[in-house]
Image 1 (cartoon, one colour):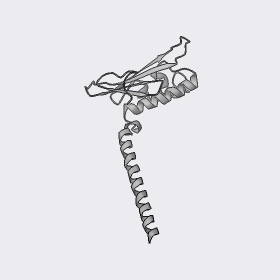
Image 2: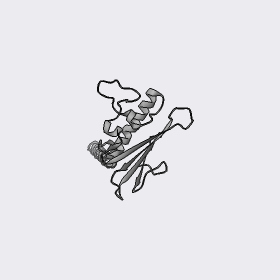
Image 3: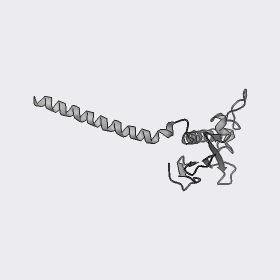
Image 4: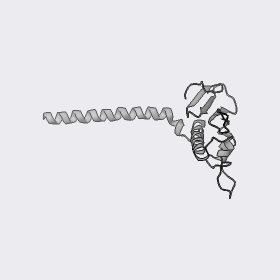
Length: 155
């Protein structure tokens, strides 16, 4: 009988642990769902960050504009001028009510863009609107109601 009680206690402990872990993971998921939601500026910034990394690996420099990350014309091969890494709408700098601005920097004066900054700001500037900033560190920074910068808090 004692072995039965031990098994029951172990089973209840396991169920409790799994329930707590599931609850914790659901809270974490609900907090971070906009990272995975394809319809948020944050997810677009993640796409831009990955695309910039891939572009730099492929061509040895960051592009001079977002347009270079966009699709090539029909029938043309992808190239440094049109790498086909992001959608045309995002390459044009406007998506989901946000304006995306990209700036490439040649910090060493060597002719190679080795740093960048991307901002995403609401087109209709609501006082509570979120403003985003991304640079080569890959960290997305966020401000509410004013433009995000390198010194803004991580979001």
